[in-house]
Length: 482
Image 1 (cartoon, one colour):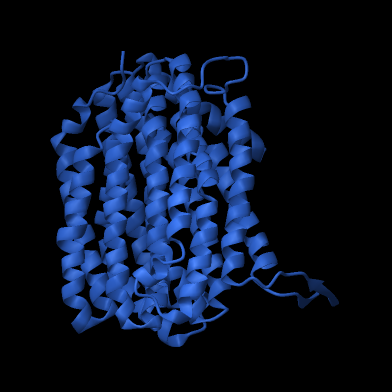
Image 2 (cartoon, rainbow, N blue to C red):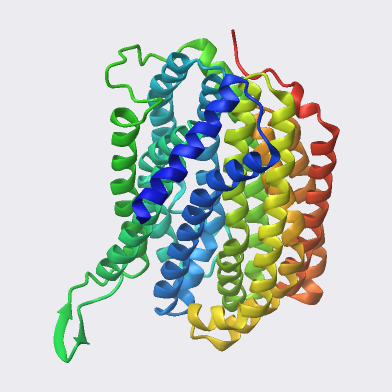
């Protein structure tokens, strides 16, 4: 029965998406239902990813504050590399959404073929840069000598996984752009489960447990922080392989089996990918440069502050990741609507998804404010680190509604291929507001000052993104080449 219900929801989702491509009218109720059905799998996948990070952090946290600080020190740089990978994928899968909306499935498959080659080359190049800087990066970030060795090793292993992460990101984006949110979401949940399993195997030594009165030995490689990185690499490799196989052989819209064509990248497709993805890549680089600057601001506050800041970021992501799930839905709906030349429908989906994001993240912010002490007691046994994190999280809770507005509105703009101006808005906001305020407040308020600066900046960013959303110029972007 449950499988039948699940199958019916998938069928209804595809039928509603087909209405976009066929130019059929849609009621407000059906628009909300479609946005919700597309958002829920992505939200669950995002949440499962955060749960994986929670478990990673708590497992590493059990090794002590220094182990947590070693990962926290390089975490913003990890986001930099992950963000660049995401922008490469976005440059291609937005084109696919536009072509599917225009009922040009063969053109969508052409983009897919070329993206596989181009994205893999990009992933290898990014990984090479990361490997080269891994030895010195923690020292550049001002890390204590006690944590630099583990931080370098963790970053090195992560960089080896970047080509795999690039394929996983690209394939997931392609499936979501075709309207298939369920497969990438389910595979990401499986990836989280595998990561936990591999963590138990690689982080800890052999240990004895009692199960139903029977003693047994759980094997382990006792690799500590390095084991956490290796576990993530292996879990990502399994998921990426499954995602790629489904995309190439099973996807109703994009499978390449039975549809021969050239994998050689063409100037037209690459130019369009650069037009969409390059501003995002530059934004991610500068944005994460600001995050790295935040790490540099936090580092002099001590090991406890670094660990608390890292834990706080992981816990807060539980609030905003549902927003990113809704943003993925917005990108698909707006991209297909504009590809079908239905700007009014795109505007309607934009308003619906932004309202959904604000509602969900407001609720999550309230839950975070109330539950922060309990969650942090699970994350770390260090009472001082936990207290610092709880105080920071309760400041941040007030920013969640406007943070949601900026996240989902950005997803709307990406679906329209409008990335340059929103990227500039993001960069001005974080550098002119957050970093300047954090540097000013850290000396007098400590970690709370850094998080207060973040709260003020996110509220400002949400307001300016809502203004651009209402202004409507994002609808006038050219969505695909004829």
